[in-house]
Structures are given as structure tokens and as C-alpha cells.
Length: 373
Image 1 (cartoon, rainbow, N blue to C red):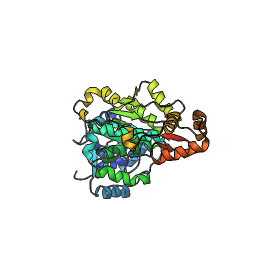
Image 2: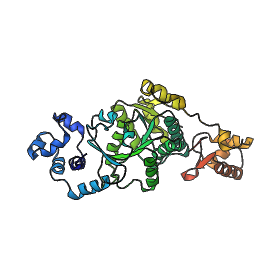
Image 3: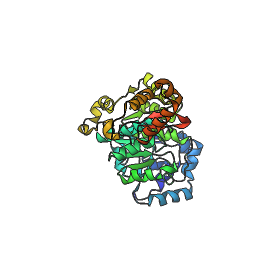
Image 4: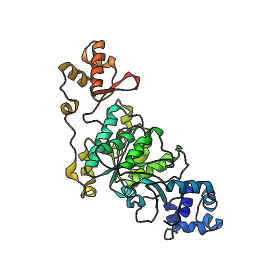
């Protein structure tokens, strides 16, 4: 790209996307031709006054900051209509005109599965996301998510542990990683052959209104979206809705009726999402789309005793059975097992140290999965 400024100007007209051009009947022209139009001509295309102002009078400082960012190693501007623009993303109704990419831009065109869910998952949910990510990359898929706390991060890390690629789509400019505590994770993603991507230019903060547009890119890049844990009001359900509208497959993992984070998944299943218990449920549903992938490379979930290193005594097995797969308090476990409270507390401590259970907020305990990441 000789001069990125025209494309960077389009990127700074933040509400503009390729769907606008199609509706205005100018999709056959290079998008940068918009910059040659008069204010009146742009208005006749149905563009808002804010968008027109951003096209005609872009921020000089903003464009300079974008160019400085692009000067860094491994950074690219992927533009609408270029050979490296992801074909699946190009098929959605509102594809971005510009993607800022840090890392392997070709990773955006690989077959991908979005793994999304709660920012505050249960330990079991986090383990589940990581294990599904490991199965997915073992079969040749790339894991895509939003770098958020919780399920997103578990999906990214699961892919990295399995030696696979993962793509993180951010709801802010790539000059500042959000959340900050995932700066190291972002660096690992790039170093492992994955990519960070955003349609937002530098200096744009992670505002609430940016995440739905981020979510439509996550689902648009992917052949399907897997929701692991989600409350009824969550961004993960927005991603799932957008995936359905874009013609992608939607998958959801069910949970306990007592777990608020299972309710979003249960709603999706009632609305037609595919109920998922194993990675095979995803592979079978996607069928021909995955015909060319390494389906023989699927990893099996490891045996519990092999992972944790030793068998449990009978009382510990009874306590784990009583815990089940929904969070429970010590008082609940005392009532279910008949064991003394101090014995239950002591056993839970041992189980936590050995990796069988984890403590959540509020003093509740939850099982962990064998092979957790």
C-alpha cells in the first residue's frame, strides 16, 4: 500500500462500513473515491453529518498516530477488496472497510470457531472453554474471541496450550490493549502465529458502544460461535445473535439450572442453538465445512487419575459426588454428605490444592475439569 492515509481516513469515519456503499449503489467504486466527493454528494448517499465531517476533515494528529502505529513490526492494514481481506467477513451485511492487524494477517482467513462467554465464569466454565479450544485447534480450526476476562481468555489460552493459532478482536484501538492485564496474552497470541485485529483506529478507547461492533467481527470471521457460560444480559448473547443473523452456526453448552451463567446458554438452545456436550457435536454439525481439516488430530480429554496423579479415597469421592457440577457452599456439602463441617472444610482444602476443586466468590466451591488449562 503506497499511501495508507485515504484508508486511515475511512477508518476514522467510525460509523462507515462496506454495507453503506452497497446500499448507496457505489460498491463497484474503490471506497477511497468517497474522499473526492463533495459534502452534498456524500449527503446524497445517505451518510450522516458526523461521517461526512470525518471524511472531509480528518484529524491530522489521528492520522499521524495511525501511521506511527503501522510503522511497528508485524503490523498491517487490511482493506476492503484487497486479496487478504477475510472472505467470510466480507459476506456479512456490514463488513468493516479497514482492519488494523498486529500479527499474521492471513490468520483472519483461516477457518475459525468463536468461543465466547462470561467475563466472570465459574472455574468449571473456564476449564470447559480451555478444553474445547484445545480440541478445536487439534482439529485444525483457529479459535477467535475478544481478549476479554473470563471465557474469552480461557479460549485463547487453550488454543495456545495446544500449539494452535488464535485471533483476538478488540473493541478499541490496538495501540492500547484492553484489558491491560491481558497485554502478555496479546503478545503470546502474536508470537504464536495468531493476530490481534480491530476496525477502530489508534487512540479509540474501549467504550461500551464499541463492543457490539467488535462482536459482529468475531462472529463474521468464524464458521460458528460457541457460548460456554453467559448470563441472560450479556455481550456473548449479542455475539450469538449476530452469528445467527450472519448465517453462522450457534452452539451452546448447557449447565445447571441453579447456575445464573447457564441461563443465557439455555435461552440460546431454546431458540435453536445446537446443544453441545463434546467437541464432536461441533465437528458433526459443521460437517462439510470442516472436511479438509485435521479431523483425525482431535485430542481426547485426559483421564482424571492420569491428570491429577493419584486416585481419591472413598470419602473424597463421596464429597466430589455431592459437589456435582454446580457451585455449592460448605454448609450444603455438610447437609448432602453428613460429614462434619471441619472435615468438609479440610477435605475441600486438600482437593483445591490437588486441583480437583476451586473456590469462587462468596465461599462457594466448584469442580475443576481433568486436563484444565
